[in-house]
Image (cartoon, rainbow, N blue to C red; front, side, top):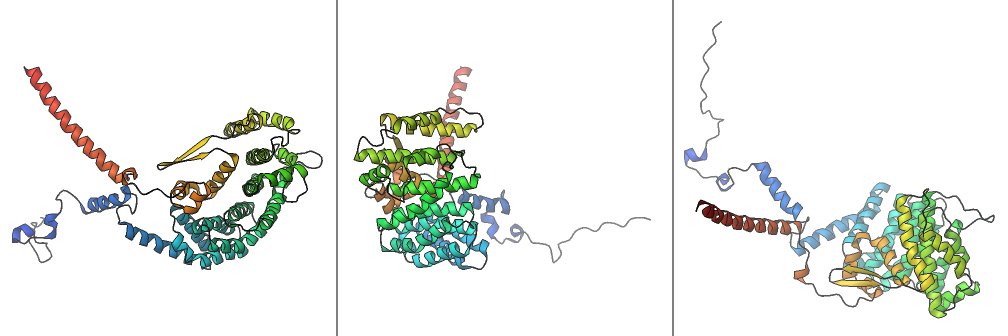
Length: 440
């Protein structure tokens, strides 16, 4: 059966008219002819991505966006879902780490305190851990003043109760120990209250000491990490005591808030690295404060202790992980040098145009405690947070210097592109000259 002829295509009513045929200009004339809609959209997105998010937005707009998101996260701390409350607590904590906003936080410190307290009392597991993580960050943001003391007096008893609650998870209890130690360090008032919380922390990590028959207790890694956190928080509060008080506590032994030196030495036999390292740093701290009051502090027990520290500083047992052995030897070499020769730590922390010397075990302990909570935001708070600068004796904040401002990824890309273009032009000229010489 013969096929019919194909009809030619005609410009029907649904056919689009070309602007260049009818002589009408359109918006598409001003766009790149060779670029597609998708490529243009992705190019605009890449400007934001390469510029570091909101780096290209003006400072005021960026501040407004940050505060709006932070308000939403604070409001989310009161929602019914436990997972939602946990996410909101973690979001607020990340915001407090990335930015220092004391004025914004001080206006909402009561709402934040109530939300943290509610999650600590009624929450479980990850929610309690997130709330405990946020508590010291709130005190860091508020700085020294009545607001921080109000937060401390309201949250410290709750943190202490969760820390000794056997029904809570070890992770939540460890976070509560750190929070209790830092909040007491930042905003604690009477030393009697601090001694009481030190006694609570002491009762926790003493469970890692040797048993009555001299055997090392068998603990899970989570529980061992919990004991190490309690010991680290306890040693942080020890830096608030005067050298005479430390000397009296470890020489006379008539107190309930402090273990004896041989108890700390027993912790060096723990099967877990975190407990051993926390015990070693605490021993160095005790010796530093005690010898500041009396040079003859604990001379009788130094010989046996030095031998145990030397074994840990040269440990080569294969049943321990290679990374753990390396970290342990590095840490205990410094501790051994101090106990034997009196050489304090010599660490220089550089941030921006400034430098923070860590030339004592007290200063190192305080710095490590802040790093535990602030994490990646430590350098920012050292630069901008007045309370942190006051604790580490850094003085007034330095004026902003645009020359030292760190370039964004987009700025570095544009500078590299300009340098590449100039280099290409220069090389092209040299190639032309070389061609002329060869032709001659």
